[in-house]
Image (cartoon, rainbow, N blue to C red; front, side):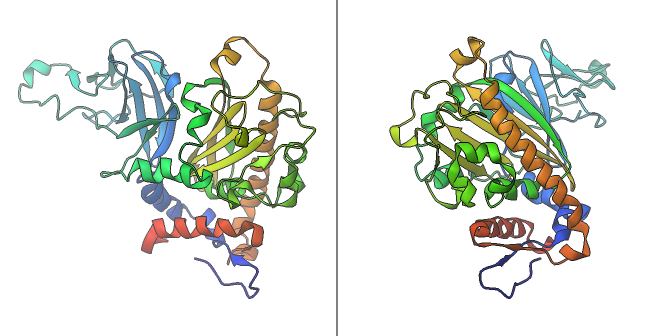
Length: 375
């Protein structure tokens, strides 16, 4: 619920309880994260058949594995016998099958029930019907995206279309060849803040001059408070003295092969709702995936992706990693400072958005529309 400020230059935010109410958080899990496509795992993390990873999507644990044919498959991480969690580790590798640690019901990598104690005494048990519950999966940008909805929305419209809308050109993202890049670094952050505070922070740059000295040295226009996401197709230009997108402005690793001249020496930020951020610079791509764990806690996995030959050579990527790691740490600290005040009577009716933050109002409208009458 929002209020209407008296000043025409200001737009109301969501009220404070939207960031603290466990009931609202459950509704967001059900009506947003369990109904939309979420970026789950990097496909290359599951390199061989039998490799698996479990990820929290909404209120579910989703198990993603690579089958014997080399395809990725996703299932609810629940044994169909008595409901025990099938895989209790976050990641691992099995030889040919997934076995429940409770009663040893065993499934192949396509989710079919293949074995169980005393199975011969249950000739009427339909192994296919009692297989694992499949979850729709799509691969894009080198990641597996999953959707828990019975009828998933169009991936082309809600995921690919969202990126194309931001960049103003459906081919602009393809030129980075993200699916062909290699993982140079991954950092996982445990942020003690509501997921919406993190999205809002990423979307605006009103705060950049205050808390991001390293970033504004490389992207001086950010010091003016205007976020790249305010304008379709706009990418913030590097400072003249910055040779690359690094913590000290030193050179990076050359231009990715598909980058056009108009994209060179520019930074593009893309929000793919509900939980993915794409950061595009000429020599690497940074991908954030958010996993809301509670109303006041969010896990964020951040990947730095480079050309495979850069990673294979053992090149020192620390200066480019350090730049956005500092940005992440600064942003998440700001969100953690904000979270306690969401319960304050001073924020009972919410706050306001200044003109350079007005696009966040569209995000708030989207959240409330997703929740419908339950908001």
